[in-house]
Image (cartoon, rainbow, N blue to C red):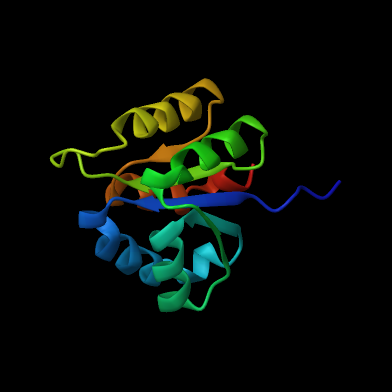
Length: 128
């Protein structure tokens, strides 16, 4: 039985968007094996930089984090790569916490920094 193609959500706070784009460029070969989605500007920047198709949800502060969380609950997102900025106050902080919580509740990998994202995307367990 053929497994469905996994979906990875890409999210980055404003101060981390450049890091996300650089990470996506470095890992383009690995990312092209998956369906990709992301919040507003992050999805747009990654798509433009990599020429990969990235389904765009709303910007995080406008409900994008909640949309991603809903897709996790629907079992339509398998992995989250979320470069968040723990040192910057976020106006939508409750949404960010809800997204982190829902990823834990549904037991999906959520990488919140480059080092963890590298481990996740290159893990032999990602295909399982």
